[in-house]
Image (cartoon, rainbow, N blue to C red; front, top):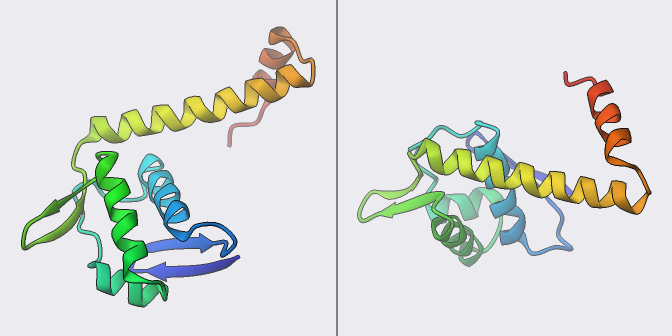
Length: 128
């Protein structure tokens, strides 16, 4: 695991996994947590690649995935920008939370925890 920083973005990379997938996931998490300003400009592909010490095609693929998901957009002659749609980010946050919750519930089911037991455990969690 290695931490790399590009501007205000901090990434933790595991070189045993595809880098672009990690970058997409970490961008998604930063957006969902409100750590990236809506409508902000992303670094150019070249600058991002140089600062991250990765192949520019990895950055291109990352930006393409984010664009496909509606989380960023290319503007001809201006660069690539994070979406300015708060509803798009809200939907992303909801999807991520539902995915995490689904995984959590499946694990509890495997362990034989009842709904009532799970609800009691959740009520007792410190949400700091």
